[in-house]
Length: 83
Image (tube, rainbow, N blue to C red):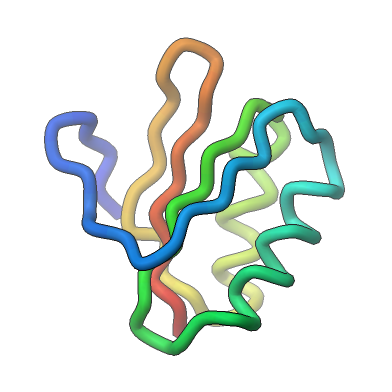
C-alpha cells in the first residue's frame, strides 16, 4: 500500500460518502463493487474517521487490494483494486 499524496492512482469509479457514518460508507462500497469488474480501481472519499479501520478490513475480508489510503484536511481517500 502506498501512502503518498503526490501520485494518485487512476480509478474506474468514484464513491463519495462524505457526511455518512458507520456503517453507511461500507454498505455503499459493498453495493458499488458489485457493479464493477475484478482489477478495476474504486476511489472512495469519506469523512468518517472509522473508515480508517473499516476500509482496510473490508478489503482484507473480500480479497481487494488497498492501493492507497490518505487523509487530507478531515477527508479520507481510498483507492481499492477489486480482487
